[in-house]
Image (cartoon, rainbow, N blue to C red; front, side, top):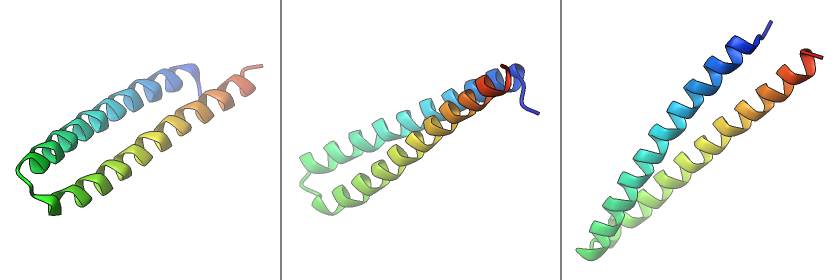
Length: 77
């Protein structure tokens, strides 16, 4: 059964993962801007795709945390 302690641990872990994904996305943006300034257009599509995948992954993690919190609140009534 899920408890508040598990919820706090899960929330903290998801925040760390989301922060890591955001840092990777920032790195991808920097690489894309650098490639654009050097006129290396072939790099732009893979970085955009990777950034989109990371964005979707971050959104999925956030959705999971919100749904976990809703289940936890429903069970604690």
